[in-house]
Length: 141
Image 1 (cartoon, rainbow, N blue to C red):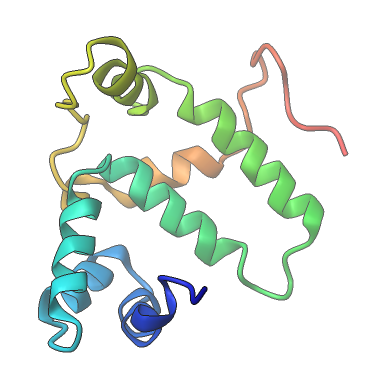
Image 2 (image 1 turned 30 degrees about the vertical axis):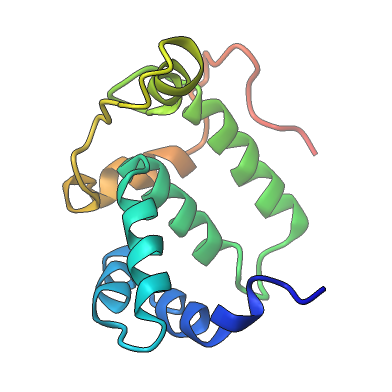
């Protein structure tokens, strides 16, 4: 059976090859070929946590380079896992769990309304070394 991604491959490559998440949104908004798919994809992204989307997009960019070692990637992913578990306004993970699994209202109240509300500092904080008093400390490789 053919993958459901294959018919959308050109659109995916065009829209998601942008350097900024804001430009991915713009590419989806203005993409004329495969319009229905682009609109559904944009609507899905707009329903997700803006800070989580921005951090994930940044992680994909940072780890795409040939200079990145497996150790670099694992260290960053560990830091992300620790930082995503924080309470709002620093992360939306707990709010997402509340909305989907606890209250089941599917109406999360994200800490940022849109991706435009998420600053570079908000994103960069996720990648910083863990605090010296962090209970688990930095990942030791």
